Image (cartoon, rainbow over all chains, first blue to last red; front, side, top):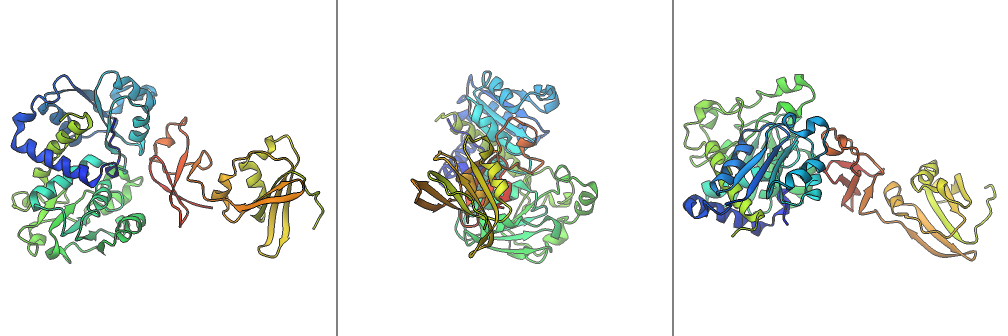
Length: 304
Length: 141
C-alpha cells in the first residue's frame, strides 16, 4: 500500500506518469468517470482549507467515487481529545483512501503508520504539501511544455512557504533549472534548503529583495502569500504582508511568455489588474490541481 | 591520579569530555546496574588536558550507540581477564529515540505525548539529526 507524505516519496518516473495520466484525463474525462465507482475518499481537514479539500472532493466525484469527511477539527472527535492515530484507525474502517490536512507537522506520517488505507498528505503545518507540488509541476508542464531549462522566480515568503520548499526540491531534479529567490530579509529561504538542495545539486540561484531586478529573465514567477498562521507575532506579520505586490507596472519588463503562478489563496500580493493578463496562470493552476489529484487517487488505489 | 582498582572483566569508557561523565552515566542508565561503576572526573589526559572515565565492572551488553551522539571522541575499551581485548570509537547512531525532544512547537510530538521522540541521522559528515516527523534539525552536542 502506498502513501504520499512527502514529494520525495515519488520517483521522477512516477511523477512523469502522474502528469501523463492527468493530461489524458483532461483530454478524455469520460474515460475516467466511473473508475472509482463504489470507492470512498475521506477528507480529514483538521485545519480549514477551501481549495485543497474541494479539489480532492471534486477529483473523487469526477472519478465516480464518493466523499466523506470533516472540514475542521472542531467538528471531529479531535475536539474531544482523540489522537491522530485513533481517528485514522476509525476512518480507515469507513473509507478506501484518506486525504488529510493537519496543522501539526508530521501528523500525516503518524497517520500513515497506523492506517489500513492509503494516506495522502494534504498539508501539514509549514512542512509538506506534496499535492500542491504535483499541481505546480503539471501547471509548468502544460504551460511551458517542459520541466527543464527554466528560470524560476520565487517571490514572497520563502522562509515559511512550504510550497516553495517542495517546489525547489522537485524542480532540482530537472536539468537547466535556475532559481531567483525574491524575499525580504526576514523571510529568506532557509539555509538548509540552500545547502541541502540547491548547492548539493549544483543548482544556480540568486537571492534578491527586488522583484523587478531579474523579472526580465524569468520563465516562471511563483508568487506566495505571507501567511498569518505561520507567525507567532502579529506585528511581524503586519510589517511584512505587503512587501511585494505584483502589478502591471512591474510586469512591463517581463517576458511575453512568462507564467505567473500562485498556490492561492491570494490576499493582495497579486493585484487584481493582473488577472486578465494572459501570463496569469494561477486560476488555471487550480484546475490542474484537480486533474493531478484524480491521477494520484487512481495511482494510490492501484486503479488502471 | 587517585587510584581506582582496575577491572577484570568489563567496559571502560574513556576520553569523555571533562564533566560529561555524569551525563553519560545517566544516558546509559548505569545507576540501574547491579555491579560496581566508577566515574572518574577531571583525570589528566595528554590528548585532552582533562577528561572523565567510566569503569563498569561487569561484561554486559550495553547499547552504547547513543555515546556517538553525545560525544563521538569517546573510546570504548572491552576488558576480559585483565586484558583489553577491544578498543573502538562509537559511530553516530542512525536513529536516536527518546533522548532529545523536538523543539518545534508545530511538531505533532508537541501535542501527542505518547509518540516516541525519534531523530534520524540525515548528514553523517556534519552529524545532523532531523526529527522524523517535522524534519526540524538538532545539532549534535
